[in-house]
Image (tube, rainbow, N blue to C red; front, side, top):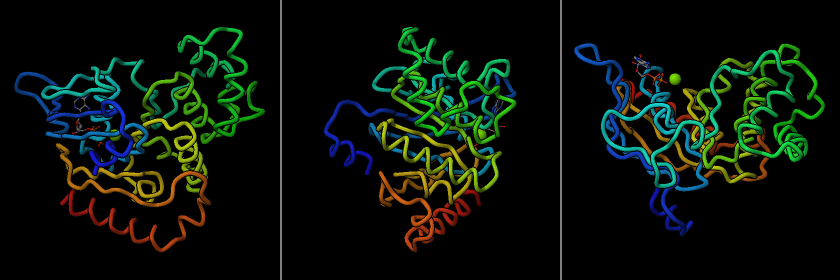
Length: 266
Ligand code: ADP
Ligand code: MG
């Protein structure tokens, strides 16, 4: 399925290639195999959801793709090269990790500065980014003056500031209330469609997986291997999120994915 999509796109190397990857933490007698062996190719522009029970190695796999870790065995390639931390991907974590003494504007500007955007271009880029994540009018607020959902929006804007080929998100909405979470899911879906960015999103919610992914990879319980690789044919682009969630197709897929993760974790 991945290869047919790559053919369809007809362009260059896969955005991500994970070949026979195994990752262990620790050394000597005290090692933990966190993930693998895993093989995965992700064509450019795909929205891949990594789905699995807690502890199965989702974050580890994401960290390997971001270049924060090097695999114990096998290889990870991003656009054909070994990923270097900070250049391969924009990353969003469960807690937003903002600079608390800076305003919303200051946090985004810092990311733009690190991304090498010239000073006189930053204001326009910042305005576009904040509009993209629905944060217009909050520029001067401090991070403690905005809601949890808004903080996570700042983190997403920051991850998009550097025009990295990949956007990686590790359970970014897990700590948010249900309503905020749904709104952010809709925004991330739209942002990914608009930017065409290859996206890897980690979650352990079946609802979230089906709503977001154009493909869902279900991992077995730790050390995670690929249990199921499922294309999601729900409409992309400009869709009514609420309508989509209420559709029968959506309910069926959610049930299928929830069932798959249960048997994968058994
Ligand atoms: P998930 O994100 O799916 O919950 P993780 O990738 O965080 O899973 O963890 C996979 C396994 O690796 C778990 O058993 C976890 O305890 C272990 N692990 C994760 N990070 C470390 C680390 N830095 N040192 C040692 N063990 C780790
Ligand atoms: Mg995790």
